Length: 346
Image (cartoon, rainbow, N blue to C red; front, top):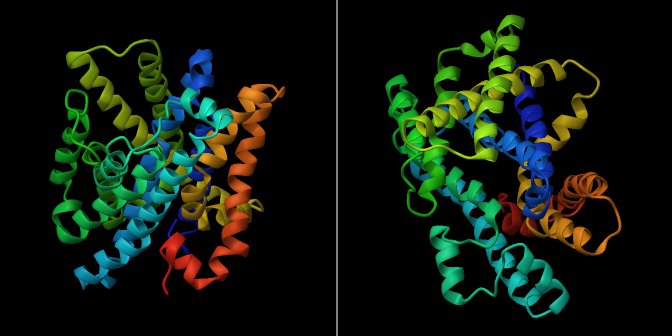
């Protein structure tokens, strides 16, 4: 699985398809159809852990190049936090203006948005408290995860630390951590899991057919169990903690399954499609939400005669294709634009 790490690009390609598709399943659809809610949480149980896992694996593969920790953190701040700030400001500006237009305000209000104040914007951007662009949590949290792992290098790839991070993940069954830390508490374990597996040379294990089949069975079984309780009522106490353990197992097994399938795809003719999406997955992630996908879905559901299933298909394709084309043919070809929007090098 280590040749050119094609599997990593393909896994990110699969992941970004799932991200965009899941974001088309807006609250209005999920509230109207239990099946849609089930599919939505089924995807959410593993698709973002997959991105943290791939990032952790690539981090560990290149760790010998990161001797200058300050330079590494500065580079990640440029790559992650600069786009986070730019897209956050853009989102708040669009929401503020749109709330002045009755037709758009109606759609936004139905999606839970209101007119943001300067205080709302400051708290949202600095601490991720009530941020209007909810998908940007990943960018902020990934920066924190990178910073922790570069500063606490060996500690964060210890198997003992992995157990501690799993306990931190399960603790979310009972504790809501403040602001962005609530996301990070669930993210660290998958980044460190990748580092432990990479350091131990476990990539060959993921190629064995029996292990792939076992991972897929565990993934589907654990995912169905957790998703069922999420949709029909989450219990409390020890049972809820057990379900969080189940979800962590589901995420890990889902990651193994997707990475193994990605390694298989690397040997097929459809490889270029997934590697292309994977190479631009960060660009797509930043640009597809909330307006292009969730916003467009809200407008179509409110004003279009098209059936919801067709709307989902159309918006998923547009949510992938438009950011990909913009980035490939415009943004990445203009260095200042690439620097501001994508954190590219000047």
